[in-house]
Image 1 (cartoon, helix red, strand yellow):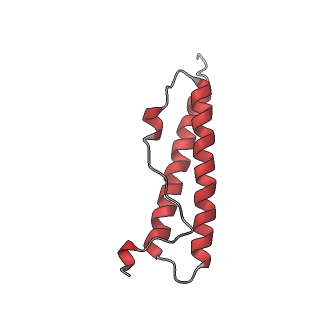
Image 2 (tube, one colour; image 1 turned 45 degrees about the horizontal axis):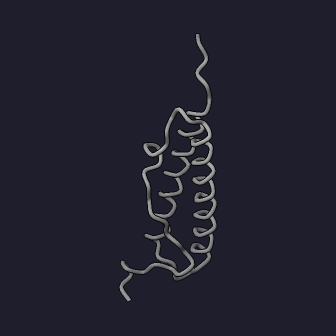
Length: 90
């Protein structure tokens, strides 16, 4: 089996929607729902990365890509959470 095509069975990959652009900024409940979804995916990625790191035969490139995706999710969560904070007049 080619290492480039290796995908561990324990890791499930979801389709990748565009997060920040897909959320209506004026609807706080929609933003909160999306933040909850992203946090769940972030947690699942954390568990998948831990399982792969424990596996000595794990593909390093796959682990690196999952970690990069996890960081990207963290950035998206931070952007959306900051959108929930109302602007205060100066």
